[in-house]
Length: 412
Image (cartoon, rainbow, N blue to C red):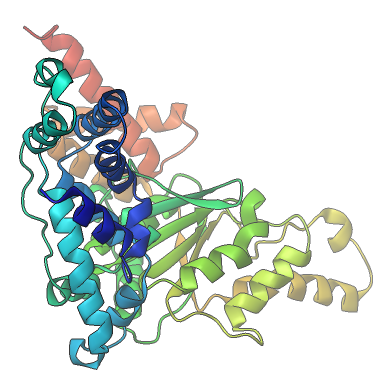
């Protein structure tokens, strides 16, 4: 192995130069550099590399993920142009960079220890006792055409890391263990789910789509429906970023970052209610309307609220003889919710709808009770929980499942 040639090539990354900052690349580079230092430097660098590989995956898979998460000009062009429209010099540089990455990913513990024995022959007896890491699979993409297809199909950048994201201290963070709920898990509300699905599909197809306000009673599945719809279309590049009321101050920054990505985003504002009209209220209205700066085409807002008008009203505002004041107050309260092109109501189910949900869940989880008894227990449970709702139905079924487990005894 030509170590000096390897190091020179590694320093010559161009279009994919950000890959040199990836932990796996830096650790490998440190091992190669250590051959020109001491045996102690080699052992330290080699141990760090081995530990990283053992803790994560093989080299080729790690490089594949880093390529997918990278932001580079070739990735950007791949999502906007055909392969033939990308300049040849960029494609050639990508092919060179991939050859370097392939050389790195083809390394094994045996190869590195063999080189170390040559560099430090006096320490050969000890070096042969070092742990080894096995061969990696071939790098999944080995030329510009293959990388183009990867970026074109799956997108690129930070948002390729996950489907769901949250905001912490003003920064977007990927949720690796997000809620995996699917629409099949949610019973009832077929009309509401169909409306959200059709709007979302139109958005993904690049057609006209509306921001959506889901409002209604608590426990009716508003938030779960939004998350389930995103999970249904995740394979088509749909992402969700959840913002709480306290985080709305980061809304412009989040929109700027998401707007520059090739993915489609649902910005999810859960339990949206304002105490009064303020700067955030006004900014949100302007964004939904389009504003002077315009709105990114890859972003929609889906919000949930227990209030139709989103702004809380108090009795003092209602108890006045000033008809103009009353009208202005009502118009202010409605001014944000009216910006949502689609309003979907989630009402508390009546007795029949509630029991239908219970029946569906009971069948899904194998609850073996006579329907009459099941309904009686479900109604009794709803009374203790303050009313009927899909959430109440699911809680009731979980209770029945746990009681069944208790009856069957501990696992063998």
